[in-house]
Image (cartoon, rainbow, N blue to C red; front, side, top):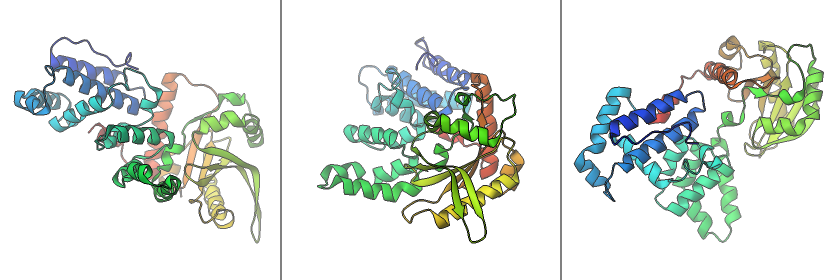
Length: 357
């Protein structure tokens, strides 16, 4: 992993930290999460290298090394590099000394906010356990924080019935799981074998997905299981057919997908809203979380995000599918477009800058 972010120790602390930060900026096309984890770990490593022998944190304060560096970096880059943050980066490096050098695939499955939360745990064994469980169970930051605060590790360790403790945790933290982490946008489905330059029907698209169901499930992400195709829902007056139905066992809810071969419309979103309501009333069990609906379309629309029932709705989503494998640059641009769509839908500003603290 460190081939993208690196530095040469010039024996000048300020110059070397500048090199690390500039290297991070040049690698911004990659996942912000990966860059933040790498950058903060490397900053912590480089600052730690400035220590002579086994100097303590108090001795560093006395020498004003971190204080002076914080002033210089803040003047250069603004927030995110105060003295407290720099010590946090050093502690991050000390608590997780191998995640970047070892290029562990697991190390970058968690965000910087996850790692910042893990730094609260003083016990090294417990901290590693929480890290492993957060990766394996796809814990949101809220779930991780709740489990640390409730001493979940120690309760599991001491309980004669650990499964009961685990079941209690899953029940209490299920509402905290961030659904947005499980909704991909865009969805790359080049394996369907359909050309974007030819006409095809929604039925053709559906058949191609069913034929390549395993690959489609992998593209959707963690926790998805196939339930039904063209599921029949009957009301007192009408009959309806839902294109694809899945169940996400991590979110503990049904996920409905309606396929569209054109740009999403307000009619599409309204129809999915009705499907979700019907499914909750007629199919969902009491121990299931509320149903999620996704309109999988060839193009999203910012006006739909702002002015339709999609707006401020945490159970309805529109995702764009791509029938070809994009280049890195094309994928980067598409991800940025879909991030803007998401922010308009949820009426939020880009919070990525807050992740640097």
